Image 1 (cartoon, chains in turn red, blue):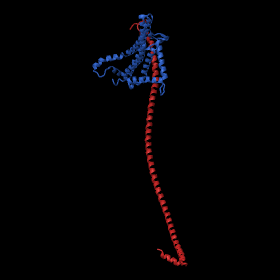
Image 2 (cartoon, helix red, strand yellow):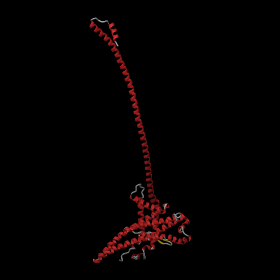
Image 3 (cartoon, helix red, strand yellow):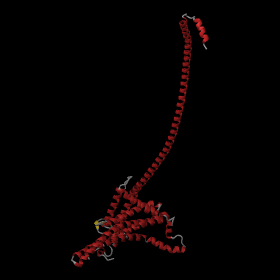
Image 4 (spheres, one colour):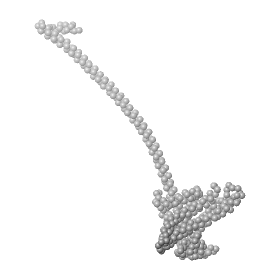
Length: 173
Length: 265
């Protein structure tokens, strides 16, 4: 290394080797290092490290909470699916039941209606029979009258009602 | 070229006069604020201010807080945690202080007009002795006299070990000197080389402007030297950080030996 011209100012060689400048620098360096060390040990390191730890805890906690929520949501979804299936089964059963009930009711009404109709039919038949009987009864009277009228016209003599009636009754099949 | 004085930048001069003490056996302790002390104080203020402002407790860090946390993470994971291991946590403040102090003092020495405190052998020597003393104190506090097992090479014939023990001891005792001289040499060399290339910029430039013809080549040399100054300054920034890291890493390696002496040795 080229000998510096300025070395003359510090008594030759490197200025750093001028031992007269050492004690002051050493003392100042030690004091400054001590101050900085205390600052780092008591303030900076706890603060920065604490913040980092706090953040990691928070993130881990958040992830844990999210995982728990997801698990709960999945459980809810499974439960909801189960409930849905149950409800569907219930609804199907209900529909089948309703159908059966409706069929039964329809059958019952039909039977009732049949009974009513039958009754009406019987009444009507009875009435018809009565009407026929009535009509038949009248037919005899009409026949009697007609026979009397025919006899009166043919013979010019009024026929005896009792005789005619007897004849009619005899002629009846 | 009589005006080139590359060592002038390392001269100490008083800025504010302070008290002088006469200590027996040491001589005069001059506590004046010199340019060296002034830049130590500037570095301390920069470090203190940066961490005071950036060591916030925000959950989502801003830029300064992210930088502070990145530095903390580097020291914690790479140095104390990576080298010393689980037992390294108590040394985090010490290593952090060393790293920040050396890095900042190196960096402000690169600023124009700045004084490089870490190019002073007294300063690097003080930090080296401090580091060494810490290793000694921790070593004896943790292991007692078992500390001396450090010098006994394990898994070796006792005769060979006996032969190697003085070498181990010497390599241990030489550590403060290598620590101090490594940083001192890096800073000294870096600044002297930049100074010399910068003086070429001026010297060759002046020569180039002094006439035509061959003299013009001086301008080329001046330009090349300027490129070198820029490149070397960039390199010095890298070295400033690397040397701080190297010191901190070595301090961790030394501490690891005495902290984990009972296992893995």
